[in-house]
Image (cartoon, rainbow, N blue to C red; front, side, top):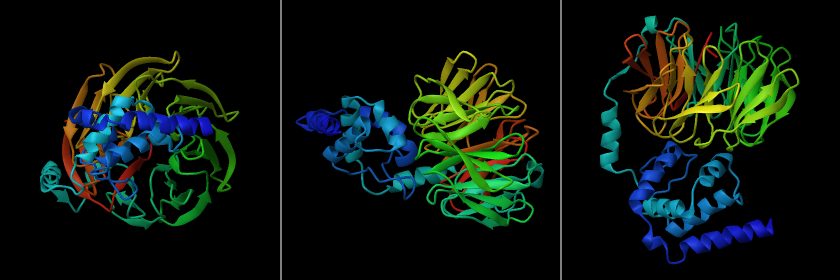
Length: 419
């Protein structure tokens, strides 16, 4: 540990002593695209949990980035991000962020407002919601339903949510309290609040509806929740930074994104063991995922601006696709035509043709993150974290049709029949 600390300090001193002035601010701005999902290009944190980087002293930023890179400062996301940086990158980023104003400028505010081109609706189009959509509200600490537009009281920092296959229960994680909330969908009543691991993020229910897997990003584990007993019955150890899970239809395998950087984990659900890790070169911080209709291909969204297309049988990386800045959800439509991904640091979603891998970008509003398609694949719902709205996309015309005002910081969407 002492050697590691000494190395960290040595590196920091090496790249700060007399070199900050030589840094390339324009290159720093280009590299900052990978940071935009949390800190925005303006250097102003997306929410209270992300620090402002604008106007910070270069030496301080270099020290912190170096500590994340060497592992002397622990954070699964930042460790993975900083690992991809060389000394020049760190120096350029520090110079760029140090040059920025410490408050959001009027020009930035105008630009963000201009993006919201479609006026917010206060009433949802019922036809666009053949099944009910359940939206988790991070800052409102609630769950909202669409098209009914009812609100259920939840816990702090409601993040990811998921439905049981029969649609009778909804689960939502609360990373700030290390718990998962369970609701009855018929009434919105809280049935249980279950302690899990540290910083739980994604939650998914097994196809038979018996168990839920909760990805504990802060404790490198997955809590297995028995939905009949409403209790944790097992813990699966995985590599650092598990973020979300996707089950195969037969329930025999679960794929987990390892945001700490290892890649895509494969879990045998019978033994509840991690049996394989698929490396994802060119991907920074595997974040969310979905599977093709035939379950032979995984589409993995990273924390920066990429989607990896992975052949699961061989582990071969077929393609890395550039999408919007920052992290986001990803959903393969039930008919298998499209893989749709958000970009919390941008104003558009990317719709990937799963056959040709061609990409169509559609402007939807500020901070798109959670994405889910309706079971009939006619509609897609996108949470707009900065606009406090949900965008509705008509996938037949591939057009934005409506933006619905909701609570504060809508994060994720759950739809029955599309896990």
